[in-house]
Length: 183
Image (cartoon, rainbow, N blue to C red; front, side, top):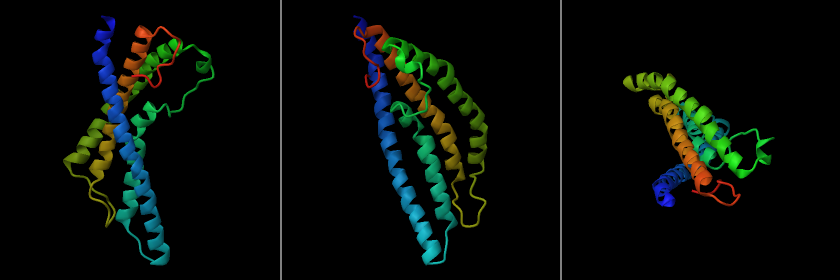
């Protein structure tokens, strides 16, 4: 009976994890595009003695996209910096409690703060269809700024998945295993 109550939450966590994995893999390919554009810029500058503001800005846009749109993927893969001097010695149940409390009291509030503080900044950029100030620059600065809203939303979603997985681990695990990798 208890497992059936958890089942929809397990499916929700799995769905979020799949979404995060899918978007993370797509975003990872942007690094290849960023390297290719950087090489093209260098070749243009040193061999053809020409340049392109739009290409230089595209590298900046891709760089921002990799870091901001890839943040939830990094959270899912446990790639963010953590201080685990004590944490690594705790049992898996204590680690799950710490993960839940950390997400509830640090991760989600910080993401919510970023979302609230960035909202007007991004909205005003969209209102004027903000473009690059550079001649020959990209006309989509408002899209770049939108990443400031996308990042906290995707991290909050992945944070919710991590909370669900850790709660389910605490409620239903009978063996001392780690919630990492379970969904």
